[in-house]
Each structure stands twice: as C-alpha cells, then as structure tokens.
Figure: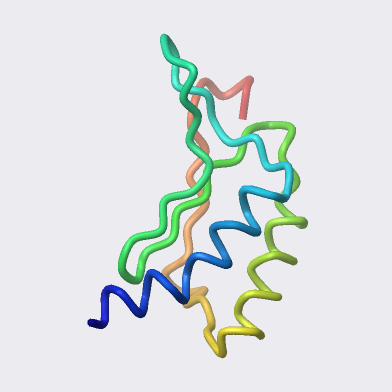
Length: 87
C-alpha cells in the first residue's frame, strides 16, 4: 500500500517536471531521453546544458510545499557528466 501511496503522491512532481520544458539528456542511438527518475525516496533529475536549474528548484519547492515534504540537502548531489568542456 505504501508504494501505491508514494506513486500517487509523487506523480504531480513528475508531471510538473515533464511539463516544465526541461529537456533532459538524450540517449545516443535512440529517441529516448532521460528527464527524471523518481523511485522510493530517491529523485534524480537529468539536466542538459540548456536546462534551467533555478526553474527546477522552483518546481521542487512548490511540490514540497504542497506535499508537506522536503529534500535532504545534505544528501543532495550535483554530478556533472561528459567531458569538461561540455559541463
């Protein structure tokens, strides 16, 4: 039951991220792209060089307010990928 409730609670965040215009990362060789992975108590959002991190923070803040949730900033990481010149 808790998994179902989590899914219902997290879906508005997933929808907001998808509707925001965040483009995410294209997967080479496919038409797929990675935008967000929301699983249990872990949220991963993939941003490309044109995506706006501040816009993501606003989305996360609104969802946290509505859901009565908060992100643990001590466990939050930004992990740049790709070659240094493209980060």
